[in-house]
Length: 429
Ligand code: SDX
Image (cartoon, rainbow, N blue to C red; front, side):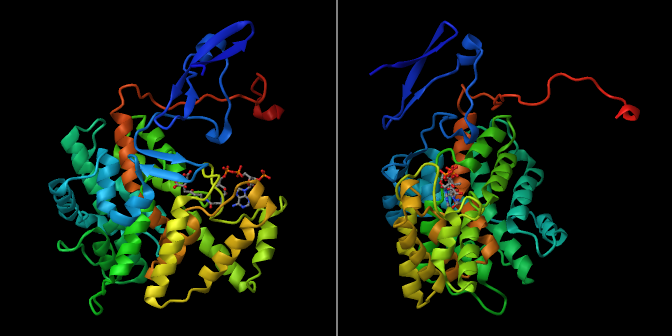
């Protein structure tokens, strides 16, 4: 098999070496393209472009495979915890007992936020979308913990920054929820692990201590594990691009949160429920909405369907669908939106438009059903995605700054604007 690709242009031939990944994926390296041929590539949305080499996550979109550091997502969802999966993604291996204990203890050590940060919540209108306050407050961490603002943190500093962020984000999110419902903040507890602590901060109140239910804790663990990383998706690429300028981790992840907010990305889990609620209000006519999603003149889409990489089932959607069924059965909840979602999936997967375009349910299609059953408000669904994706963002930022070959990201463009023209004085316009 050829180990290079020839670019033959204007009588010049450039040999581009072919790079082969662990699982046999291939890319040809165009590092010399512009200097040798004057050409650049043009690939809107980067559908055919690799931005880096990474050892963190592997996806096979044709086979519906997702692995974190080589471990299949199905095994992690069944056996692991979010904190353990975060360690795996950031440090490249499963922690031994001592490492896991120390990592978990550090989460409790750093779960508080500076008391002055509570003033932020008073400054926001109650109607603020929690992704707006989350992005702002993550960036603000760099003001309250300036000792952690390092261009190139050493191992000890990296460990501290990572745990600080993973732990404080959970507190920031719970506090922002309490602010919107006018209840007093509930502080993190030293005796609770990651997910139970989050649930307690979200749903306990001075008059009603929250009763932890094992199945609810496990369902959230699984959701956070499933969201923890996903190669060079829009928000992770944003974190890498911002970090490539040597911006600190908090600033880079604050930008990633904003990228994730979009309804085509992590905001889709909220958009799916809004779509299903709209269909429910409109009499439950799923076929009508599938027809609209296929109509090029209608800008609506089936939210939670389709994926740039998966051209088969998103393995996460399969796990989440079963998790939703199990949790609702356990809690004795019947959510008509789950029935609608299943009906929509069945109908779409039999429809030539979706079949021919290989559009399947993605990670966002069923996750909102679980968040609803737990009592998480709709506008916090993207926040749950952000909490889950934190370890992946941290792992990619760390991998990038520790890569000696990494350069600042600065794509070119093809200019299609006006030819050179002279300035015209105001009186002559
Ligand atoms: C996430 O990248 C990641 O890994 C992301 C993520 C992660 O973990 O980080 O997996 C998380 O963001 C999941 C995706 C959540 N977004 C949605 O559910 C929004 C709905 N889906 C789409 O907007 C779309 O499918 C995307 C954005 C997910 C992917 O878009 P692409 O790859 O750019 O595909 P496209 O828009 O070019 O669509 C190809 C064709 C088009 O039709 P034609 O022009 O060929 O006729 O498929 C159609 C599209 O119109 N299409 C849809 C559709 N998704 C694609 N038609 C109707 N409904 C949809 N949902």
